[in-house]
Image (cartoon, rainbow, N blue to C red):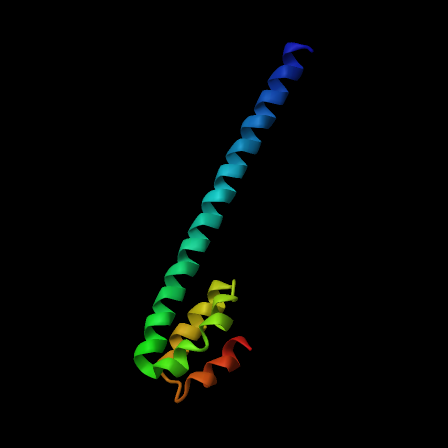
Length: 90
């Protein structure tokens, strides 16, 4: 293999590694944010609705979209009953 081809291969590998690291970092940040939102939602549901609120957790834990989780967290403040939250994610 020529040195030019070897150089291109090495450059491509380096770019691929950098892209992979950046993608992994972004996914880690997103997952950390999701976990934080879920923890906050759990506490809020328990404080505001008690057992009724905690019964929604299995459904809420399935939500991957952090924007939807943010909306659920925000809606807890104004919801009259826990099941009202299903309108956000259901």
